[in-house]
Length: 460
Image 1 (spheres, helix red, strand yellow):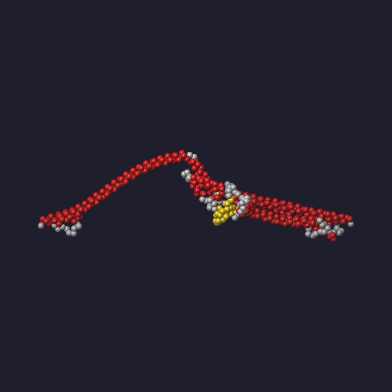
Image 2: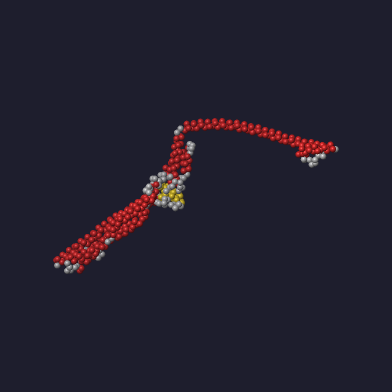
């Protein structure tokens, strides 16, 4: 018993050291060497079974990996073969493509030069089409022309035919007078659909107003300022025509540039306003002189007609004219009696002088206006030159437009001063001629009447 106990201790230690992991599964620790041996045998059996199972799994995985490796190697070999085949095919195709391109270039001959000319012509025509008001009606041609101008390959025959068609349509539409509905942009930016009359690619009008085309717009626009009225009236009359006859019309061969320049020209009223206060003073003096001169001209014309009628009947003086009033002073019972010839002459002269103011009125003012017109114009000229020199002082003389404002003001004042002086000079000369003619008649008749009185006194 003691021996068994002594041996039990090392066996237990061996059990703990060698197989405790597997023996730990047992519910009870071995009590004898036989139990320990039995447990050890069972543990070995379990371990052997687990090892065999693992070895089987390892073997299966090894076979599977080997199969996968063989499959991958086969696939790699196939891909390498295909890559080699494709590389050879690429080389063959590249060589064939080079040969075909060389053959194409040989067969094309001058078609390459033709292609370059086509692209250049398409680009030039695309630029011209963008600047043409015909694009408002046919905007779809611009993308096609741009595509032809930018193409890198030989265009097909359809594109060549389309390009020829667009060229022909531009020429055909350029010779037509066409009415169509389109978008019109007002000066304030508002848009509206209006009836538009287009005369070739030159001008377009709507409601008697000229329209302009700006590149990139989808419609036509009204300029801020229309050309002079003589152009607008012709355009308005032409727009109302509905027959097929020939009618006058304003055309701009520059396709809008000349009309724009005419539109920028200031009107007569704009020039007057630009002349400022001096020009208004000149106009006021001129208008006053013309009103007074015209009134006096009508008065002298009526008086002259009455004097001529009075000359036909000197024996019956009429008080509605100067000659009749002079004759009535000394005819009939009013004939002076017992007065000296010198006194009678003075009385006749007094009567004639009494008639002169209505006949010669306003003439001094007209003479003053004739003289003052150029002087007032000179004042405006000096003011305009002062403005010009001030502009030069402020910004230099590099831009002529800066000096043009003051020079225009100076010239307008000069023109207006001469413009009122010259007509008033002619009008004053005409009034002087008419008044002198009437005064001459009065002098002749008064002198004759004085001679009759003196003759009557001498015979008495």
